[in-house]
Image (cartoon, rainbow, N blue to C red; front, side, top):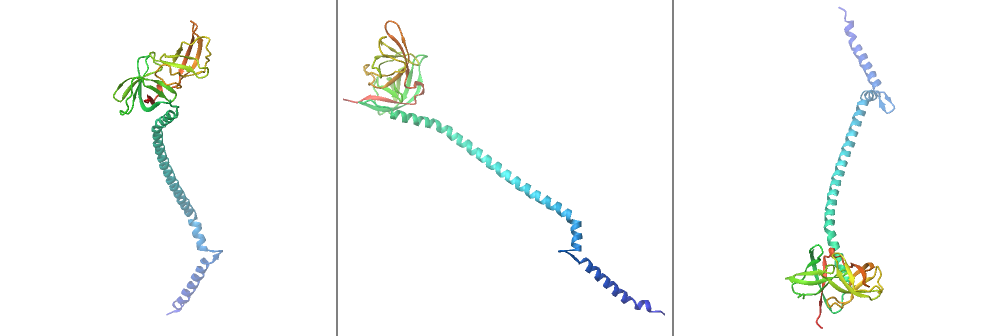
Length: 270
């Protein structure tokens, strides 16, 4: 029996082992900082890894952009709500500001000597198409007699014609039944201002008198109602009215349709 092939088997196995060792050494040979297997793996999976990295980066950036836009939208909505709130507060504050300015102007207006000044709230203006009345309210502690003169920020307004409790009816200077003695500040020319509904007309001034457009007329104090020196109005037209008398139209110094506060001038004793 021939036993030679069996005796050679260990030699063949040893050769295969050495060959495999050299194959592994070949795969582990370095090229720069990477192995041959590493290069093969990068070549095979590089595009997939690059695509994954790009997708991951886009996802992160998209999520960050979404969160930023969401926060910006919420902030914008909050700012819009705050702006609406401030606008509402501003609308409420504007009438108060106007009233404060009116009160300041009224308090700074020159007051006549010998009169007690009583503040009153102007509630409403009423009357027929040509009549001009004002309803005012003041403290019930004050007794306001009939004929008490009334002034506003611009000057004379009218006089008290009746009362009911704390409410007082004031006939305005522009009412046709109203008449007040006036004098020109510039030349001292005197006359009587009569109401015409929205403005006044000065009567009993001769054509020879020195009256010009723009002249300011004040109360003369000769009517027994108003103290002298209160502004009444400005001459807006001066014409020859016939019968040797001038026709003078006077624009009121006080804005009768915008009165919110007035002063009642009660004469002091003595």
